Image 1 (cartoon, one colour):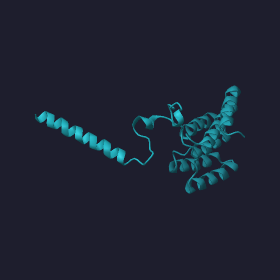
Image 2 (cartoon, helix red, strand yellow):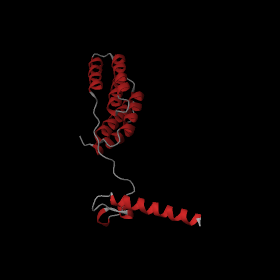
Image 3 (cartoon, helix red, strand yellow):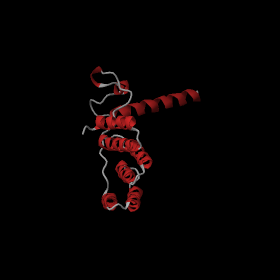
Image 4 (tube, one colour):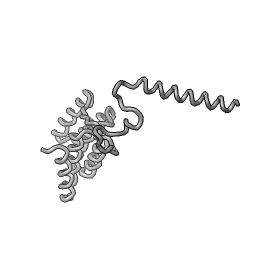
Length: 165
């Protein structure tokens, strides 16, 4: 008898929770399995599209990048890299900072390091086609600097597919 009462109480609670959940849904919102279906009977997609984003450098990191450009233009690549590493300590997840460091590495004659920075930027740039394109261009330039022209062409094609020149 106690077991039956316990089961009934659980069922009542589950029913109340379900009713409460549907009462909080806005009018016209899909319910149950209809929520998983695509509109107009289209086939459901396995992976929803990634939201489009646009990375930007914050003011502190942007000021450091400007300083690094001046140092690199003067040929002081170690100082430019140190300045960009400071920017990366401020914004370690920003692909634009990694791309900047990769560009200086490339100018300093370190194409393998530039390639590594490009791949790091690419991993962080999800949802931003402009940042992804810039990362692929850095990768292509680093490959070209090492004489790997066919691979560089492939990287350039990937960059072009994201944002045509």
